[in-house]
Structure formats: structure tokens, C-alpha cells
Image 1: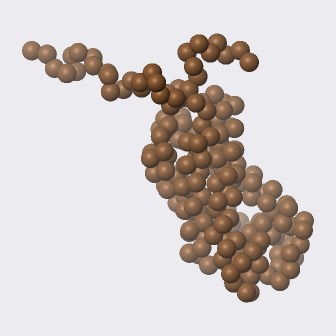
Image 2 (image 1 turned 180 degrees about the vertical axis):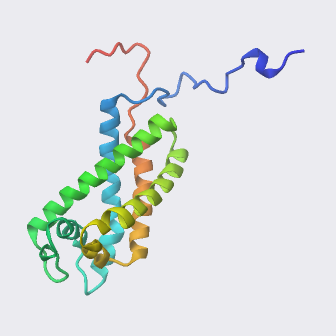
Image 3 (image 1 turned 180 degrees about the horizontal axis):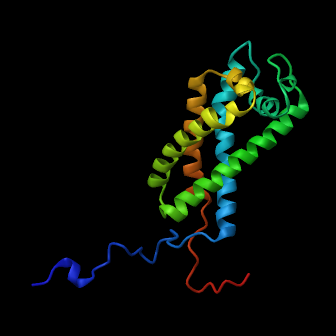
Length: 192
């Protein structure tokens, strides 16, 4: 008597030859490129709820997020609810892009190396979990380090931050799949 396991039937584990889905892991360069791209694009998606809330409220400015990042690092005199300051906005976006890129690279490492995710469904589920991880890390571990998070906590209520981080997690999951390079062709010998 034989069982299914005795036959070594692994047909369900094989990817059809017609697919472009990559079944191999990313190279280190592809990992960095995919992670940085997914993180920064997801970070821009994250800014939408915060910018819209700040734009809608008469007592806030739309671009308080980047000035909050600069004020958190260099002092509260770089933050204002009434006027825009050019350099705090530019520096704040640069620092936020570094955070988003690092988060995207970490997400790509977890998705690619740990779970081997290549499809959009699993990537969005991991992205939803990643949004909670990012929110907890940012809001309860990173922000209180300096000034008890004064500029960030003044930019928007907590529910707007939850929406923003949820959008970030889902977007990093989606952009990870979209930016992931396709599978190499069998006749590709690796020469550029």
C-alpha cells in the first residue's frame, strides 16, 4: 500500500513555467532597491491622511509633519502652526525618507527572506501587521526619546496617526510586490 507522501508528488509546489512570479530570493542589491522604493512610496501615501487633516483644520498647517521631524531632532523653534519654514520642511522630509526607506528595507527582508512572500494577498496581510509594528515603534519607542514627542503629538490626533500608519503598512506591502523584480529568464546568463 502506498500513500500520497510515498510518491513524492510535489506538483503543488511548482510554479508554472509561464508565470513571471519570482520564486527565488532577491539579491542584496534588489533587496535594497525594492525596500527603499517601497518604503519611500509608502511613506508618501502615509502623509496623505496627515496632510489632509492639517489642511482641513484651521489651526494647523498641511506640512506640519516634516517640520515636526525637524523640531523633534533640532528643537521646537523649528515648528510652527502658523507659518511655513523652508529648511525645516526640506530637512524633515529628508529625515522622514530615511525612516521610510529603513522601514521598507526591513519589511522587504522579512517578506522575502523570512516568509518568501511573492503575492499581493500575503504581502498586504504582512503590511497590515507591519503597520501595527511601525506605529508601536514610532509612537511609543522612538518619538518619546526627545521632548516626549511634543511636535509629533501636536500635529494630529491619535486616530489620524493610526490611519496614516495603516495606510503606510498596506502601501509598503503593495509596493513591495509591485517593485519586486520579475523572475530571471532561463536563458539569462547574468551578463549585463
